[in-house]
Image (cartoon, rainbow, N blue to C red; front, side, top):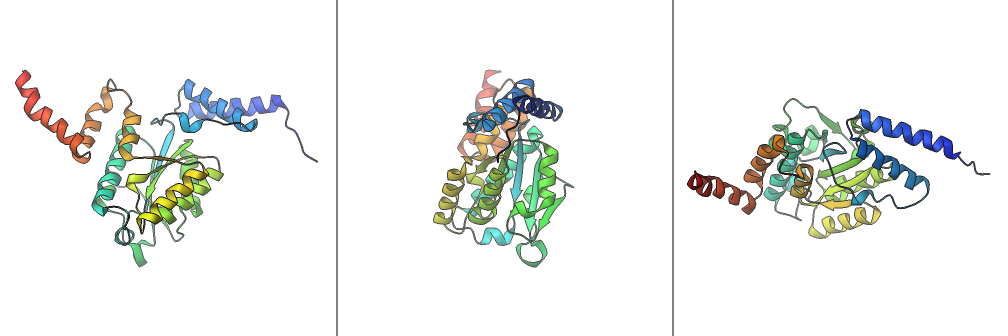
Length: 257
């Protein structure tokens, strides 16, 4: 025999969820969106969460296993490009104050420490150590995410087919909105990476790239507080885009004075 929850109790629960979201720093509009999402889930409908923008207030980032031994096995992408993109993503999260979890696997016995370029972005921050290949097996990671209170979960790491696919599937099952930063991930072959991305997308995850994430957080160049730091990340990590900004600063801007 099934038990039907009274609509009034559902409304109370949705109101409480909105209150918690506001308390965690979300805007009123975002809180209303969360209520709509929960209501759609209750009715078995399409929540449309994948059609809403990432913001610094609704997202958390998990950087997984960016370690030397894991990088040695990557064959899907140029390793230096992955490092560039992962460090850029970390810097973007720092600029916008997005909660970021650093986690590693078997550091002392196999994989080596997390890349120093990422650790330098978050000096003094604890790296959560694991024995399991699946980040979602770490209660400490899940506790940190729960404390952050963000519905959108952004994942990047090595290898795509193992250390990204498993937590993506688990997080989706537990109700998180999962985004995988495909150009800051790498697999043991192109096919391994591609099939892993296909699998998590079929399960409901959204593929994104690091620069897409950062510019979605920035959204408006009138946001002057982050304008300078964001263009700084672009100049250092965005290839031709960054070169163009450097050219304007060095060649065009001085001539306009």
